[in-house]
Length: 71
View 1 (tube, one colour):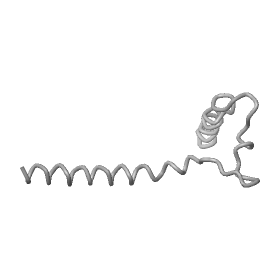
View 2 (cartoon, helix red, strand yellow):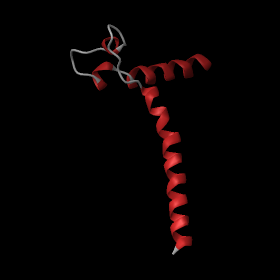
View 3 (cartoon, one colour):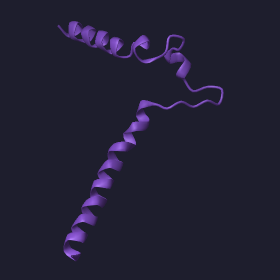
View 4 (tube, one colour):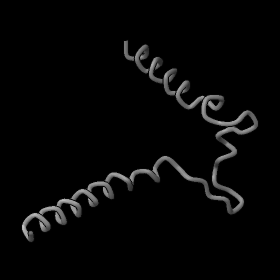
């Protein structure tokens, strides 16, 4: 049963990252690897958005509570 679930997960993973779904016809994932001085964006670059969103919520809360107390 374990290999069946792992195989199904691998199949879903392969379909999710299918090049024809995400990239133009003449481009592959290998073309987007960093080399020759070219650096491409990576999905891991989005990790910073969660702490920043939390920081903005805290700052907004501080300004709203300060404004409510001040007048």
